[in-house]
Image (tube, rainbow, N blue to C red; front, top):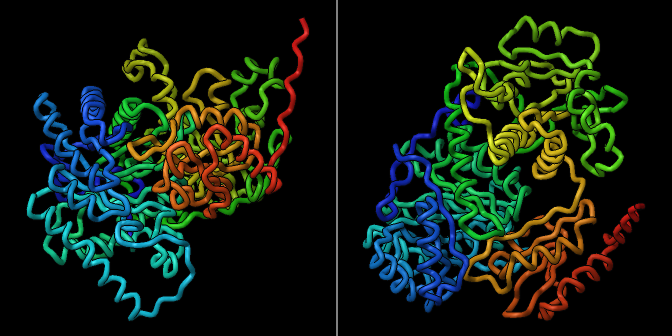
Length: 600
């Protein structure tokens, strides 16, 4: 199955155009940027103001939650208020659980987003075997529930997003396909077939997950399935890593998931989901798009077989070697390298750098740099009696992802690979050959580039060590290296948080609550905690978290262990303490190390 035109050369996937109000998605349109307002949908004025604020910073499509029929009805007043103030940004209604709310919202908006996992299905995590006849009966029930919305969207000529989320799959899908990328794809295709049967084609797909590996596999599998179904299944795709969280970690995780697909030419509209004020999402999304658009000038490559399965993760099977006194490759940890020049800058404070220490000095690691197009050089390495640590030579004129994929395809698997974030560092505007005339990259650009390039390759299973050399400050480069490894799920060294972006369904202040939970639990290495504002983003969306903190009612919190709710209706003022108790009960709590006194 093919998931893109050429995994070694950027070619944007060809799709049909879907109109959302005055904005076109797919076709020859640019990649569009979306976001979502965070206030109560019944607060008309706040909804209008937040939407206008998003539009002013470059958001091209705005989503608003409609959890009830009442909320759906109030979208009429929000849309009319926006148009009266000269704001023509398309409005999308976000629907979960209630088809009746979708039917009302569809009267007023430009697009409706539905989640197949909870639009017409239950999610009770019940184990049940379905016969083919029973399964067909369930599909007929879904058809009866979903068809009226399709007919209304078709009549009004508005768009739809069929948006599957990992973990919020229905019991029916879970029992037949499991909580897998395949289950996500089949869930969406069931609804798409109903729409197509009714001759409705103004829809886009999404396959969101908080785990970048799952998100990447799901979108690739979806595109491959669409290609198999035929050329008229060329629907646009909306990209996003859901519940990415906040700050640097959220930007890294979003770049890994979204950037990897954009680099492969997949994706027509994106949203970067941050547990921050929504306008903060827009610069990140724009920078991701701009970064990938700069990487389009690639040399054609053909007849090369990938070294990895793009639809399921498996780490490349290299052999273990030792470099600079550290073991790497095989099943060893993915190691972090630093150049000697930068090592000297931080040598005096390494004992104070905690988890962000350099492990190997580049110049002491006997690294073999090669141009992956140089077959003679590759053959020489492959014929060596002992395994070598190999990397792509600096200044190779290939995009990073293509270069390392090519290296992995040609290099014998026994040789470990060192990944780099960039192959040419920024050298200032004074070079006579003109190659350094662009402005110095900002830290956001450096972060997104490193996360996309290194993170994407890690999710492909490629890489036994990493070197971030696009960031000049050695401390920041090391922190970025480790945080990319954490976000890609390649090396867990600190607490992992899954936190949804706020919206009108949220039952507590996500930003302040997340800060409180982090302050209490940041020292718990390897524990994954989900912080969800409501039940919609509750047990399903935090699919692989160890513990969950979920809004159950105004001022009340439910606590989960995995997908199982175990404590209910806890007053919000007590909930963080009760979360600590729950972690203790399950043997995953350790007391924080007391800070050492500073001697004056």
